[in-house]
Image 1 (cartoon, rainbow, N blue to C red):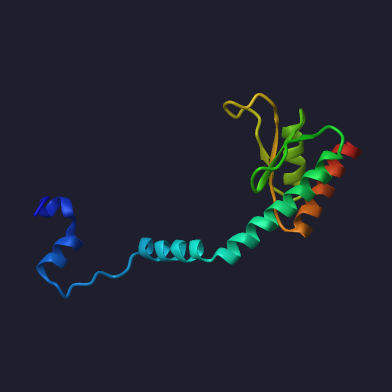
Image 2 (spheres, one colour):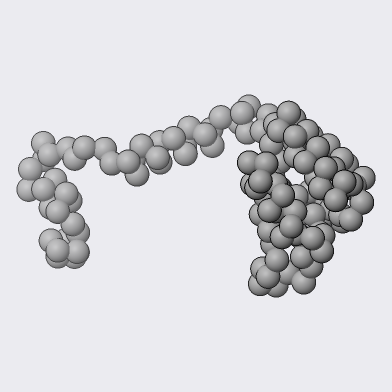
Length: 138
């Protein structure tokens, strides 16, 4: 038998002394079960990938049409929009209860810009309108 009682942990020790001992499932065990179930749900996974691809293309097209932005091609569930006005844009969005990530000063990132999440269509429409208001009216 390898390892001492101390290195094996108290629950493992209790189980070795009393074969009827069954520790309560931990949050980690529940999280692991949820993770396994989500991995096995291939239909939901495929639907999510299709949704993100569709919405990210739509959001990219909408934002790329706006002046003062250079939007990177989507590769995940967020987009990077290069703009010299990242901090004022972030502040404007925040004043309208919308959070966007100001990427100014990120290590390894030469450009300044913002990162936005790809959300549901109605949320993306609100985001595009907010960007229009800031970029076209200010």
